[in-house]
Amino acid sequence: MNQAFAQNTSLTAAGMQASVNSSGKLVVSSNNGTMFQLTAVGVANNDIGCGTTGTTFHGNDSSIAPMTSPALISAGSQQTSQLAFTGMAYGSDAQQITVSANDSNGNQQAVNITLSNNSTTRNAQNIDDAVNAINTALQKTDNAALQGIVAVKTDTNGAEGITFTSTNTSFNVSVGKTANGTGFTTSGTVASSTVGTGNTADISNQLGAQNAVNALATAVQNLGTAQAAVGKGENLLNYAVSLATSQVTNEAASESQIRDANLAQEAANLSRAQILVQAGTAALAQANSAPQQLLSLLQH
Image (cartoon, rainbow, N blue to C red):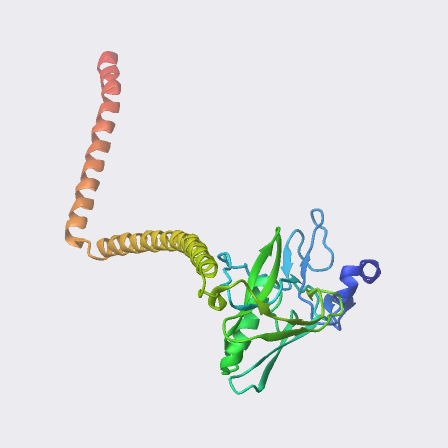
C-alpha cells in the first residue's frame, strides 16, 4: 500500500501511509492531518484485513455547500478583482490572509486569517467554507474599518472566485502561498479600487445627472432580480415548513386517537368478533358433517 501511495502524487501530498499496529491490525493514516475516506472492496469471504468487505469507511464526512444567491456589488464601493480559489484537499496546506484598511483617524487596522483543511481546523474545504471563515473573522475584529469589508463568492465566465468589497474605505488583501497550490491560487497583495460611479456621481450637469439616473435604474433592476431569487427561496422554505407542520399535526392526531381509545368499547368489539368467528366455525363444521350423516343413513 505504501508503494501505491508513493506512486500517486495526490496521496503523497495528503501524507497517506499504511502501517500495522501492536495488535496486528492494518492502520491507514495521514501524517499531515489530511481528511480522507477509505473504501474496502473484495469478493465473498475475502477482505483486506479490515474484517469487512464492500463497506465504506469514512475518515471524514464532507459538508454540503449551501445554496447562495448571486452577489451584487454596489457602484461607488471599493472592490478587489475576483481572486481564484480552489478548495483545500491536503492537511499540509495552510494559507495566511491579511486584510488591512485605515480607520476614520487614518490609522491602519489589520487582521490575519488562516485558511486550512486538516484534523484541527477545517474552514477551507470549499469556497463557501472559505467565504464564511473570512467574514466570521472580519466581524469578530470589533473594528468598524474591518467589519465593513465583506468577502463574497462571485462568478466570472463560469469560474468561481472570491471578491472583497467595502462601502466604507479602500483596503488591501495580502494572500500567502500553500504547499500544494490550493486555496487562493494567486499570492501577493491586491488593492481595492472604486467600482462604477454610485455615490461618487457628479449630478451638477445634465450628463452626470442622466448617468446617475441610469445607474439608479440599473440598480433597481438588479435589486428586483435579487428580490425575486430571495422570494423564490422564501416560498420554497414556507412550503417545506407548512408540509412539515401538517405531517407533525397528523402524527400527533393519530397518536392522540390511539392513546384515547375506548378500551371497554374495543374489548366488546373484540368479544363480538370472536363470537362471530366461533359461530362461523361451528356452522362450517356442521355443514361438513351433513354429507357423512347422509351416507350413514343410506348404509342402514
